[in-house]
Length: 73
Figure (tube, rainbow, N blue to C red):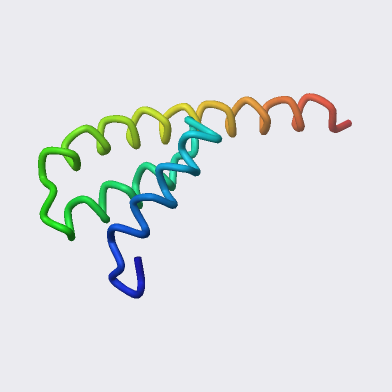
C-alpha cells in the first residue's frame, strides 16, 4: 500500500483474508486499496465488513477485560 502497488496489495490482503476471514485491518486496507485504485464497486462491500468486525473485536475485548477483572482480588 505504501508503495502504491495496489494490485499487489490487493492480492496479499485477499490472501490474508482467505486465511483469516475476521482479520479486521486486512478488510480496511483492502477497502483503501480498492478505493485508491479506482475500483469503487469492489470497495463498497469492505466498509460494512470492517465495521462489523470492528464491533465484534470491541465486544470480545470488553469480555476479556471483564473476565480479567473478575479474577482479580
